[in-house]
Image (cartoon, rainbow, N blue to C red; front, side):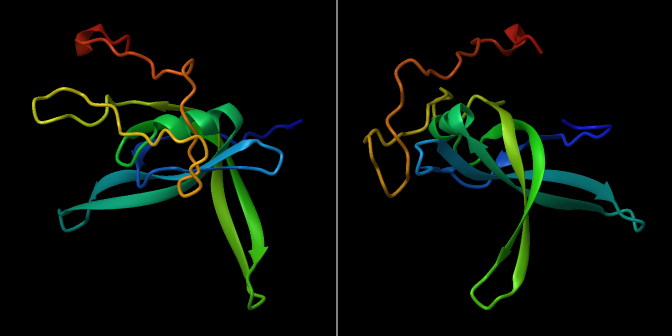
Length: 157
């Protein structure tokens, strides 16, 4: 139980690469991915500068399966979760720290890539059940990406 504290992260950004999906020895899905967030600021000299921050994210269970099935490089995504810092030692006995976001909720915010004629196309997927090179599994037929209205004015936000 948390007493008088909160560990909450909310990010909206773009995926830097396709997620890496695998499973624990117990069979729980685990997906790692990174999100880039951008900030533009005006310097004292009046020039505009861009700053990109990269965030390491890890998801478990159903969230990991969803991310592994639908998230692809370049997509605009919403993620919320909590920060976790891990300590580890490398082969030369040097201590390192890694801070990552443990994902609780994730969703796509864009429609995905467009074809030349302006039609939104779903990303190509590898449908082999046990593709060890990507760690992706065949998509569950009951787990479909939510349909978006044709007209953006119909979106509820």
